[in-house]
Image (tube, rainbow, N blue to C red; front, side, top):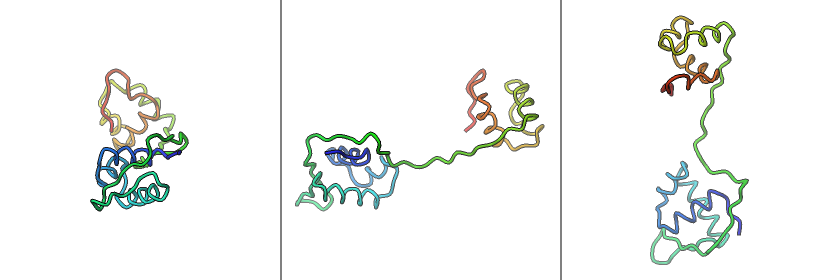
Length: 134
């Protein structure tokens, strides 16, 4: 049987007797989503509810294949793209690592977050020592 990556995670966690809350935490999703996926697995005869407890399951499959094209549920990370004007790029490249970023931002009349995004965009984040810009 072929399972999605999410279903495979759920099956393994059920095999290790994890709770819905633990599964939801591992998948970075809500318990209601886990409940829906567990119901689908039960309908496909991958798992079976035990009679002794309400939310206890027994895995019926010994082996299964994981669909490599499926995606894990995870929190989407918003990516903010910033265009870097040529004059700002020249100034940043010539002063980065020499004066504090706060001062560079002030001289360019930018906030520090925007400057940090520009630095990432220019690929300067690892010049010299690692800077913590997140």
